[in-house]
Each structure stands twice: as structure tokens, then as C-alpha cells.
Length: 257
Image (tube, rainbow, N blue to C red; front, side, top):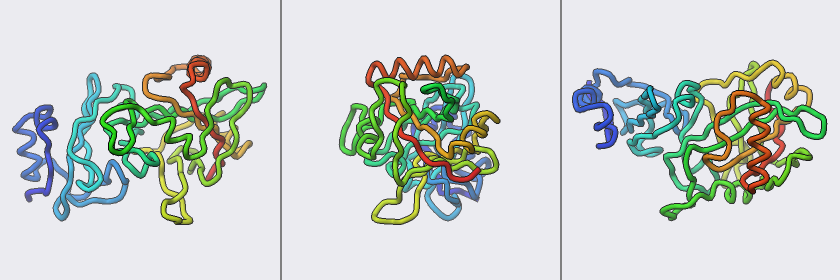
């Protein structure tokens, strides 16, 4: 059965006319899907749906989104981010005040030593610049977060302060989301970042989070940290980002176990 799919010229160029035509005919496209932006269910037989192609160095992953959430597009990401399958496209309601962007939010977990204590931490780094609405270019990722209460970090000599209304959701020992206050006076929280699939964390990280009941969330512009294979290298990269004025942070309470 034909699908109500939008396949952009860029996506068609990547997957080829034959595959694009098969998608539109319904041969290779799912009827129901989880929107890669808002994470709610969609139905390509009933509502307009965008094809979103994530392209790495060796791997390409085709995802689907409500057309009202995202346009059909090609999103180029690092290969290890595709392999992790825990990334999300940044939509306007995920980064407060941000314009729609092709940037993908990368999240890395690790234990960070501050003042002699190990703290469970998450490092959030987009793969590209995040601009304000109406801006054609520029990167306002950090200013937007500072406006939400995150604090600039110039050194990691002390842990960042807490931030009301935000939290880190851990369920069954896996990381699911970073939550922010609801908009328009809504009392509930909404997802600022949410994993496509629950993100595995180490036993040490989970134990530290359960002990302190809080998680340090660091955020940095694209190209500042990268994927570090060891926690000591992650700490070194954080120190460098802080010294260069490219780091903000907050201590968020732990939700779940």
C-alpha cells in the first residue's frame, strides 16, 4: 500500500531512485513507526511522514518522523554515533529556544573526579552548530543553555550547582532521557534529550548515581570533546573545554534507579 512519505532530493540522491520509489510504494516502509524527533507513534499510511537518513562513514540508517516534526533530510554523523544508536535529532522543543537543526546530540557517560570524589557525569555535544530561530548561522548552544540556568565552567575544581526542574531519567539501570521543565506553565517535565534505545552505563557509574542521587551534566559546542575512549581522556577534554570557555554544566537530580 502506498505510503504518505516525503523523500527529499538529498535523501533520494543517497538511497537511489529505485529504493526511493520502493519506499513510496510501501514495499520497504513501515506502516507504524516511532518518530525519530518526538518519539511518539506515527503511521505512514494515515499521516504525512518524513524520511530522515542518518549517514556515517560506513553506515546509513533510515528513520522516520512526523512531517510536522522534521522535514525529510540527510543528517551526517560520526560512524560511532550511528553504531551507538542512542542519538536524537534536535527539535525546537528539545533545546529551549533553538531553531530546527540537523545537528545530532551526542551523549557520553563517565565518572569525573572533582575535589577527590567521583561523580557520575554526562557530556552532551551536538555534531553541528545550534542556531537561534531566524538565524541563518552561528552557534548559540551554550547561550541557550545558560538562559535555562546552566552555569559556565572555567575549571573543574568544584562540582556545578543544581538546576531546578531538570532531571536525568535512569530506568532498570539504563539511561533513558534528560528531562527539562514543561513549557507554558505545564507542571510535568518533557524530554530535552531522549535515547533512541536505552543507553548502557557502567556499574560504577550507576552505583555512583544511586549514591549521590544526582548526575553532573556538561554541555559543550560541536567539536570540543569528541568521543573519548577512556575516562581520563574525557576529563582532559573537559578541562581543555573549560579553559577555553566552551563548557557549561549543572547538577541534575536522578529520576529512577
